[in-house]
Image (cartoon, rainbow, N blue to C red):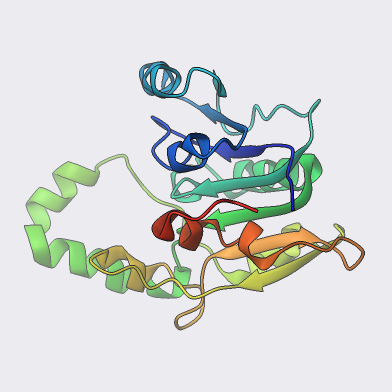
Length: 204
């Protein structure tokens, strides 16, 4: 499957996009940090990467695949997250991927584990003012109830990544992958981008 372009919301310095860029795939991104965008463009001069908030999606363009990894928990409110999610669906022709989603049912255990590793005082100092949003599967389904999309859950089990166990929406199930309803056929690999990146495969 030949895709038009891959867009990452919250692309940072382009680490996630870079393997696909190297293989000749057209990539685009948006990130809040001007410094990180500068680094990304230096590494990928032919990429389309801009400075902006996640909510400032390029709504006048269409992408085959739109994804966001490790970003949704940084959003200020659930309303903000919902607008970003709906925007991603609107500009995606085939699929979107939401990677690294914190599970609300595991919030207490996640915080306890971090405190155990650094102590309460250090935790409070490090995370002061950095509250994270935690999600349930129902939240995503409710936000997209009127959209023509299918929701697929894939295992997240990243070796050496301790947060993985706290970011499964159901036991061993995460992240979210959404794609346009029935008529659109898409190779499974096109929305399993996390595994493709790990294996160095081309996004097809």
